[in-house]
Length: 544
Image (tube, rainbow, N blue to C red):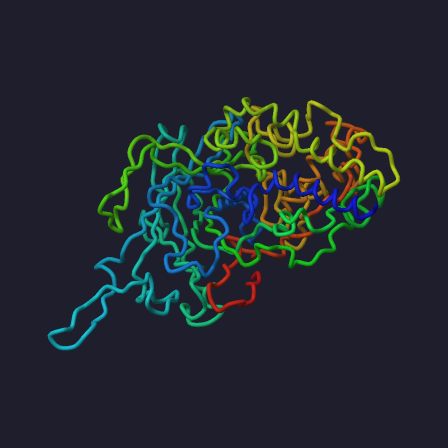
């Protein structure tokens, strides 16, 4: 009988987490909607926005937007450039009307080096000809020399004040050279390309640019480049009918000390199947005073990517012009809070969500107030959980319908924590720039739910555990006491009662733990990517 319950539980979690992770070999918001699967270069995967915790940068906000998911490091020879034809944007709402007040627009120009590609003399005497090299790179690269590189990846950044299409546009420039063009490092082809193991870090760091932002007296920083995938999930087991038990230790309802956050993670880090995959990160660091405007110091943020409405393929394609885009920009990807499109939005509306703007999120309200996922979990878990615990819970799903706790968490923010001056229900990541950053070694991966008010849902840091947080919140963690009182005392937020969420204090987990110690302590925080060679190279480690 026990084995029957175990397999039923596995199938239940499999169905539930499948909604959250969406497709095999993907994670977080990777390929979360049918249409975006056609355009991996434009697929926004993770969005982070947090008060910088690099020592000496406490007055800054860091924004990270990841694109081009699940990069197999060995995927040469073209590797993983972003799309010349795409428009990548980071939007900031600083007054709460769910419309962008500031937008940073990134456009990419990937082309041959000036003077053309490197040509090699082939043949001898009268038969000798200079032939263009067949690869993007034919020599060792370093921070001091890229002489062997045939292909340069450049980008420009514009700041738009007001509406992203009709607002005032100004160029962000290099604070040292005044140039409007920035360089992106070549991807980590392998250790030999960079003269040995460990050298890529210094090479990539040389592409962190100081910036001059229009109307901002404090210089910022920008970086675009390949990084190690920071999202962690037990993806292989999840789609093998979840080949593990996702509720562990004292995570059962009523067990432990009642906070729901002790124990539960005993699985090996080997669970993280994405450990040797990379992503491409667009990273901005901006002084907080240049983002908050006249609001209350809380900002909302999200990232999008767009293509021209029509594309004409060049029948005689060149490197510079494989296609021609026509018409207005059309949004194909959108990301604010993690896992919303996978976990909350119904399948028929996933592409619609990706093309929408926060000001129009009322059309998706029913998915938040009446979520489907808890009902699925209940229908498959109820018997196994009650049998295992010797309880008679009548319904595992939270009973507080409509789910005001999810509305607060996803659509309005929490008063006094991350709620903007004006409250317009809308899906975006919200950050209180007035809450002091917590040093890397003191951060809690469960953020506000564990008493760390500098973490999710007050923004999102790389070390905030997205999967565990999402599982717990959707099953009613916010109905139970949160350790935000004096000396960590429990406080009920008043959104719902503990009896509304019978498993809301359970330490749900996918067994792939994550913490701030997995990331760098300096901008851009996400660490050196995994090398394409040698096979089975060690996973890069964070730097201080």
